Length: 367
Ligand SMILES: [Ca+2]
Ligand SMILES: [Ca+2]
Image 1 (spheres, helix red, strand yellow):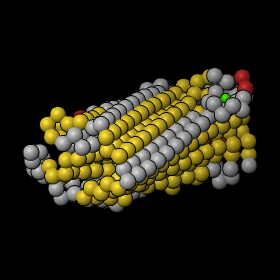
Image 2 (image 1 turned 180 degrees about the horizontal axis):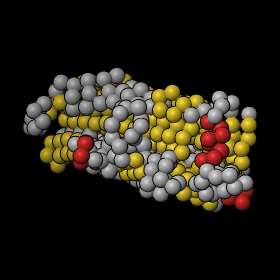
Image 3 (image 1 turned 90 degrees about the vertical axis):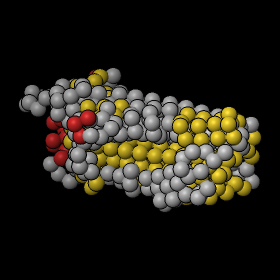
Image 4 (image 1 turned 90 degrees about the horizontal axis):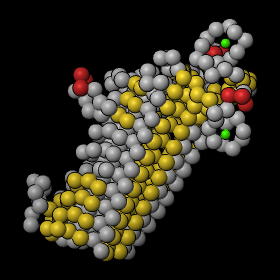
C-alpha cells in the first residue's frame, strides 16, 4: 500500500511542491496498487472547492478525511455548484470521513451513471465503501446525492438536503433527491433526511438490490410519489425508522419480495398508502414492526393497490388516518394477510377506520 498525503486545499495540478487531492488521485489512478490518501493536520476544517471538473477514482483507493481519529469528517469537498464532486469508475474505493457538498450534475441520459448523481456517481465495475461521511446539499436531474450502479456499502453516513431538479428539455421529472440504486447497496446505520424531488424523496431502488439496516429515513419530500423509499426490485428494511416523509414512507413497485422487519413507519403523509403503498403484483412482508400516525386518503397505514400480497405479522398498526381504510385499504384483487397483530385507534372520515378490503379497482372507493 502506498500512502499519499494531501497538503493543499487548492484544486490545481501544478508542480509547486504541494500535493492537492486531484494530484494525489492522478498518481493513485495510474496503478492497480492500493493507495491511501490522507490529509495534513493543518488542513483540518478546510474545504477543497473544485474548479468545475469532478474528481475521478478508477483504481484501488482509500480517501480518509479524518485528521484527528474521531471518525468525523475534517475535510469538505465542494463541487461549488459547477460539477459533480466524485465519480468512482472502477476499482475498490473506500471513502472515510469526507463531507461531499455542492455537487451539480445536469445530464439525464445513460444508465451507466455518467449523468446521474450530483454528489457521487458509482459505476458498474466499482466496489465502494462510504463510512462516517456526509453527502449534503448536492443537486442533479436524477439522484441528487448518490447514484449507485456498483456494489456499495454506506455506513454511518448522513445523506441530507440533496435535490433532484429535473430537466424539462428531457421531458423527465426530477427523480430521487437522495440515492438512486441500480446495483447492490447496503445502507447501514445512516441518516437520509430532507432530500427533495418531484419523484421520490429519499431512495429509489431502481434495480439490483437494496438492503437498509439500523437507519433513519426522515422528512424527505417526494412530492407526488414516494417520500421515503421506492422499491422497483427486491430488498429489505430492518431495524429502521421511516418517518415524517411527504409521500408514502415505502412504495413497493417490485414484482419480487420486499421484507420490512423490526421497523417503525410513522408520520408519513401521502395520497394513497401513507405508511406503505404496495403498487405491484409482488409481495410485501411486514414483520415485528409498528405503523403509526400515517395519513393517506386511501389506506392511511397500508394501501394495497395493484393485486399484490401484503403479509402483516406481529405488527402494530395504530393512529393512522384516511378517508377510506384508516389502517389498511386494499383493492379487491389484492391479498392482505394479518396475523398476531394489533390494529387500534385508526380513523377514516368516510369508510372503515380499520380495514377497507374491497375498494373498487376503478380507483373509486366502492362504498
Ligand atoms: Ca502540486
Ligand atoms: Ca475528525
